[in-house]
Structure formats: structure tokens, C-alpha cells
Length: 322
Image 1: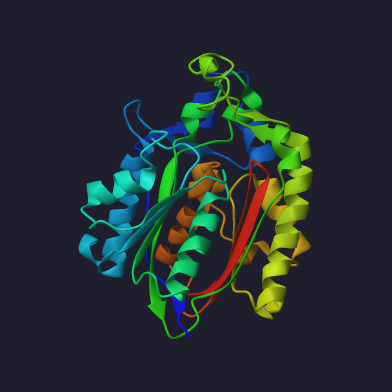
Image 2: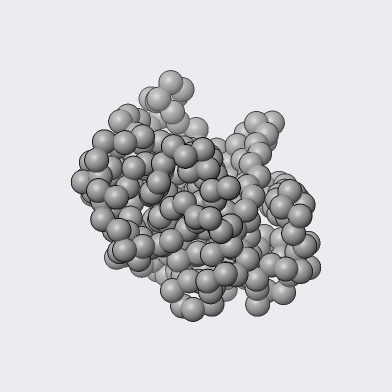
């Protein structure tokens, strides 16, 4: 049986850092209020002329260097983002061309914060089917361009960035199991109100900003993240005691802690980057993976569970061995 295995990781963060103290000058908030409720201390923000594909390219270069490959080795590109440069062509085609990757399937997927998990799951299926031999998967977000900077309940949460992985076939288990889900009944709890075919006239106005009912999102997120982790473990026949690391979506420290508690996992087994990156939506899981690998905590052969939850609502989890 052919498995797909992550053989390289990389991340990119914009140069500009916005601390909680900087936010105190912009909106009615303070460092203690933000830290105690979200865990965020600082976040990176794109420059006005910086795009999602710009960040994807840099994260991809780092992942390719880590994997020891060149652009001509890649035969498929999958990008998860909810803030693409353009409506079309899709973000993956822009990145493929800019990196000098030969013509190949280019897929862009949009499930808000779960986009990378969906993208990696899609890539895994293509590789297991023998349709690709070297896949670039990126989760990236220019989410701060969608934020209302006068709304202290949302603007303090988000940051920008990109995380990338290189996937190659392996005879030994890499990605062991995936589990995806979604339920549109919750669409009004977390959404962006402007689209190509709906309310486009609101673009560029105060009405075009992320809308979130925080308390309700928290309740559903904690329950769902616990369930989606359990379901992928059961699917693989693996006990949670066997897990070396949990890499959750970095939405909020309270959600992360509550999810770990539901899984009976000590926080020492959880990769947490929300304090430095904020909620980077589709980029949060791959960037946290890269952080954990590069600082030496996550080691080859260890069992890792990645999971995310996003607007829609969407959710997903991936169990893998590095």
C-alpha cells in the first residue's frame, strides 16, 4: 500500500508585527483583556500591497528547501485559503506559475480555518490513488484585510501568514487517517458578508468585515474539535494515549485548552503558537507544525494529530506519523 508522507515543512510571516499594546492605540482594549480571553500577545499583518500568493510562494520555498526538492519535482499544487488574491484564476495556479512548477493540477479549496486540513486530505487521496508523486500543500491567509479594526471582539484575534508542506509517497505510514465534516446550519455564527454574487456593493464599506457570534462559536468549536479528534483516532484504531502531539487550529487559547481537556491530553503535548501568530485561519495548523518540527519538539516517527474548525461550520482532523 502507498501512503503519503510529509517530507518538508515551511512557513512565512509578514514583516509587520502588531502587539496588543499597539492595538490599545487603535481600539478600546488592553493587553490583559486580550491575553486572558484569547491568549494572543502579537500577530503579523501583511503590507497593503502584500497578497496571499506572495506568502504562499515564500512558505513553499522554505518547504521545498526542507524537503530537498526543486519546483520541477512538484506535480500537483493544493492551496487552502479563504482570502485569495482573486476570484479567479485560483490561488494555486498563481503560485504554480510564480514558483516555476510545470503545468499540473492546481486545486484551491476554501473551508475557512479548516482549509489546510481539507487541502491536505485531498492531496493524500490523490497520492494514494497514484495520481501524483510530489504535492505542494499550502494554507495561507491575509485575514487582517477582512477585519473591522473598530470591533474589539474580532480585530484582536487575527493575524496573517502561510504554512506549507511537501507530500511524497511512502511505503511506511505517513498520513494514517483523515476525517472531514461540515454543517451549514451554523453559517450565521461566523461569516464574511460579501461575495462575488451576493452584496458585492458592500465591498470596501464598513459592512464588509468578519461577523462572529463568539460565545456560540466557542461552544460548538470545543465540542466538535473533541469529537473530530476522537473519530479520526477510532477510524485508525489508535488510542489517544499513543499520541505524541496535538496540533489544533490556533483560534483561541481557551478553545485549545478545552479541547486538550476533552482528550485528556496535558498541554505539554499540545503545540501552541496563538500567542505569537494569533488566529491565522487556514495558515495556523501548518505553521504550528513547522514551528514544532523546527524547534525540535516534534521528531521523526512520532504520532501527530492535527485538527481545525472554521466558518461554515467546517471541521477536520488528520492523524499522521512523521
